[in-house]
Length: 334
Image (cartoon, rainbow, N blue to C red; front, side, top):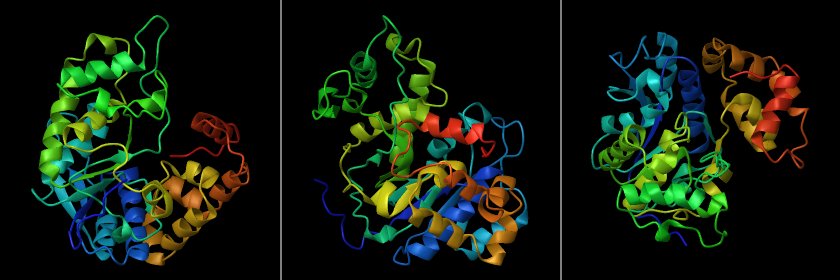
């Protein structure tokens, strides 16, 4: 059972705001946070990658309109440098951006494709015991015929960093079932210090990328590298799988929707209502309409055409089947 968070403990929220889709998602995140979490008293920090050798182009937020809307929503844009990932692995932004946050101040990271639907201040974060999102499928590792199983693959990673593997297992699930092993979605995570978390995250991710154990020889690490390293970081810092009460993040308080077609296809009516409510003001709408998928999905009704394709009480078990149905009907956008 998760312990209650320390009372009156302030913390910051971070998302990454890169030019393109993420900058518009950051607006929706900020608008939903302000609308549905009046109790959150910390700073909302939008980490912006800066041009450098790791980027072929300029990764910064494009246009002053987005900056103006984020400022009006009380978000602070903070720059960070990508020295290890950049274009080659943009998911590494969430690792390198941690070093731009104030050292020693608790933080919660969210992917920008997250909608706040409830009071974030009600979530009892225990910043000494980090965790991450459990809304995931068994996307990694992919087992090969005659290759190592889940246990051997994950154990090789824990051994690589001298971590106790057995204590990371979930005994509720049987051997060689993917949920027995410590796999998270990186849609959110938190800790008491972003620099301490970032140092461990960067160390592990680079080591796995550059010198993977033999058990990973046939495993793809793009785009999974951050999610392969994340459970090791959480374990090393004293966290685990169940340090938050269920049903809050990825539940009543937030929704990690991934892309708008998936939101309309599978999420509850409440999520759709919040999305359309927070994107309705004209000063927000005029900026979001510059991004074609949002213009078509939210403002021109394509999202509801997607929604009509599915029965939320009888959805396909696999996300890929949902995606395929949307694509087959010509409604996929991201």
